[in-house]
Amino acid sequence: MRRDRLRSLIDTAERHTRAGRLGRAVRVYRKVLAQARIGEYEHELAQARLGDLHLGQGRPELAWPHLDRARRLTADEPEYALMAGRALAASGRPAEAAGHLFDAVGSPGHASEALVELARLAGQRGDRRAARRLAAHAGRCDPRLRDLARGYADA
Image 1 (cartoon, rainbow, N blue to C red):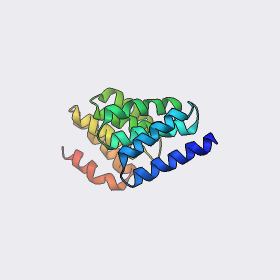
Image 2: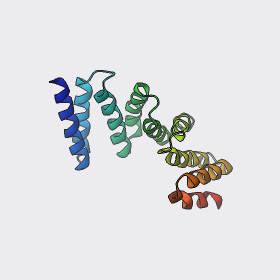
Image 3: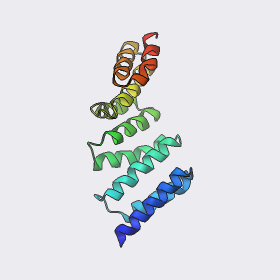
Image 4: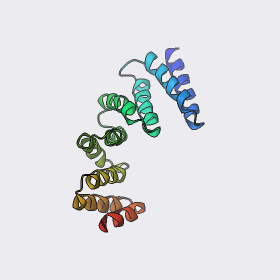
């Protein structure tokens, strides 16, 4: 019964997200957190989704606690590492962000995005050589990113 209720809440939150009703989605995911137990998949999913929603709304300071909890629950999930790195970078915490982003580099599905984020961080701190190398590597991982790599090569 409780599992069905959690699944129904998650379905509702996902419908709100797809429809662009992000505030409602956040409220429903908070209900999931209130009812799901730590260690249950629904709890982990709600943490990650709340982090993603806040990050997408440009509120990295609200995203980070949720993404940190999601990472603690499933430390080997590269998508959580990537989102956590983005939240920390957007919060002005580049050194911490880099650690999470490097965790995502090992995943074939997330490596190119993580490398792009690392290149941006290197560029922001003035390390053009590192930014160029990271962007070039991202371009080799994903041909769609070759323009980005060229942009750093010209820097």
